Length: 228
Picture 1: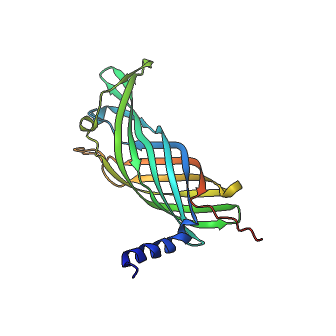
Picture 2: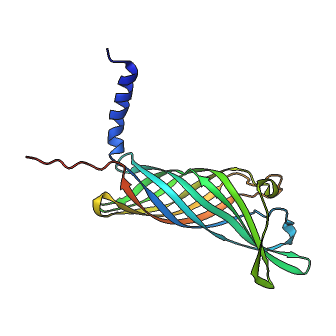
């Protein structure tokens, strides 16, 4: 008699085969333009200007075809986010570059708006849980911008929470190339839903735009059948 556990495992594999046959995995990289009210122990009233922080974005995307119109697109990302601001302290003006490195797990869905044999274009949206891995800061004096000073900072000093949650939406386009490979281009806007800073009277959330370019390959390639 066949054990029921083995039967369930075999059924699960058989059910999964059509999904795996239309599953892609790959790599993406690009830039991340972000802004957050992330100022350590600087007095907020001394902040005179704030600009966007240019960081990196690297990810391992997976694309699973649900049907002809919808794909499920989970990812594992390493992302740098932060803020750049100038602060007037006594008679000197200092510019600070504050950044947080996140490990993110975007759970995205894609609705295909245009589709042909070689091209796909659609909108993507979903939620993005994130865990902060590192925090860093450096500054320079406006009178001597060539000399930067690194601040010895950690999560306790910065008061940054380790967990973050954001919603994300944007545009996605793909082009099929040789051997089943696909080039993928993503443009996304990410809006943090949680306060990232402990004990702050400000609403300190993350906000970013990302632009990434990558390549996808089938997880399992179809075997060619040779008729004799």
